[in-house]
Image (cartoon, rainbow, N blue to C red; front, side, top):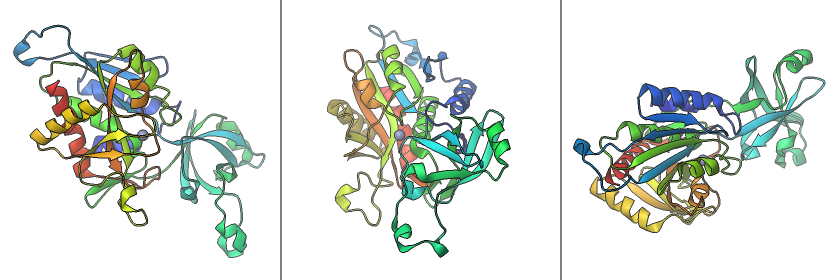
Length: 349
Ligand SMILES: [Zn+2]
């Protein structure tokens, strides 16, 4: 869990993935997971672990090429304006629900270090707000960041384009972990764990940690084009709405019932034969998995699936409650099932 904690506490929004990529690269190099590691032009990190057959057995023909892909960006903001009195306005990169953005501690990551601040929408506090104002849900453009610094200091240190993230600690609560950006540091973590636990495998395993997924699957396209895989798994998260206030038929997944294999979401339909093969492996290895359909939302698998001549692709997704907030919650059983099933499948191909 220490690695997952570090991943969640390393800020990296779309187009600003340097910090998280450094952490992941260091981790995969320390664990000696790959034969080759490189960074592509957009900034995705791609590792290749060549086939390692049992007893060096010669395989018939070239190994199957498998691509695992997890996006390493998180939803956040880029600075778009600094007012004459030193308040900072932001542009979103990825989709926060503005109802979750009131009274947030934030960090502006500048070239000369991180600055703590607080984010709130403009307007009066509750004591003096009108009834009309209390009911209103503000637009993202109405939020501002207060760094409590003189305007000239803010202007000297903060630049248009600097990354802004919400602060949210990593904590183990009951049977779950809670943190900001479990979407998708869970997928990043699961790929590392799955490859770390591999023994023998007849396939060539490529693993990509992609950039800019939250703004439209942008990094996965060139990564998949370069790798040109035979099979692919996008490693991400999905909704878990078995919580009060949501009808049961809209729950998507159940926490604790294992990793979700996406039947479909609004970006792709998973390869059903591959899903069935993976389910058979899960059942034989006694690993919990569940099926889910996400009516709205996409993931990197959609970009990979449509690369070149098309790629047989499935999406693994960890059920996450309260997704796209700073209190995202993932069940430990689902986290474990996630990387165990990935390993079991890679060893079977
Ligand atoms: Zn995601």
